[in-house]
Image 1: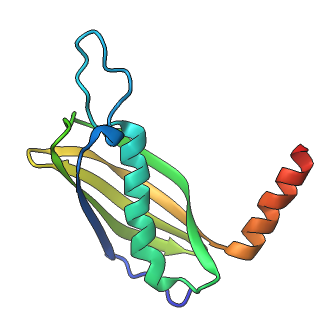
Image 2 (image 1 turned 90 degrees about the vertical axis):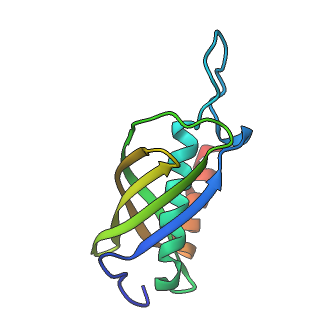
Length: 134
């Protein structure tokens, strides 16, 4: 890392829930709502993007842990704001509080941890695993 991200470093992303963000089992009266897997992916993206200015060109961050509570449904067309805040940075690991909020309430909250990795060594590790699988 160029420098450690400071405790309190915030990230934020706002978007409108579209068909690509909702559950795929809307039958029997089940309404289409923001899916937990899509929410997690977007929370991770928000945290990842907030770390980018602190990384060397040869580094990226990868998600290694997430503990999320999905508290409320959010329909298609609702505006959602995703927020992340660094709570600790130790060694290669950075931990965040994460939250999603729609226009009416908190939709989810939890903790997310990312690891800073060297892209070249990570790619070698992936290639070794791929070669072993053949």
